[in-house]
Length: 118
Figure 1: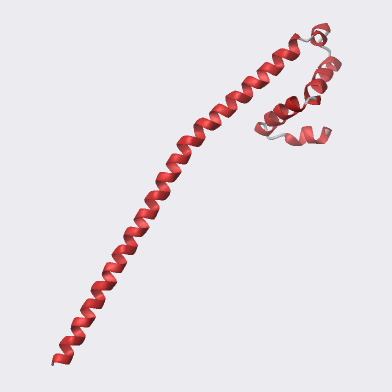
Figure 2 (figure 1 turned 135 degrees about the vertical axis):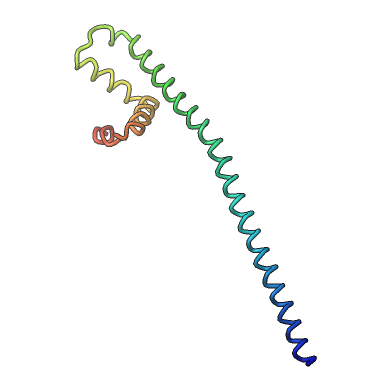
């Protein structure tokens, strides 16, 4: 009878150890999921303002470039299609103008139009 009791006691200890291991694993999963959720919230709350700032910076740069091109004497002469083409060619001939226009086209999903010209 003592052998049966000893086996039963060992079995009970193993079940308790298994239960504790399962409980530990369950808490590890909870902690991992919680950390992932908190990290994603932190990244989103950081990325959104940065994205808004970049968009406003791009718009400001494009408006500044547009106002500079309008104040140039060539734009005051006439507004025919050929003069507008010259203004556009002048704008994208500079590296900064090209990059700004490409960023605008990326937002409009039409980069292939500029890449076709180049």
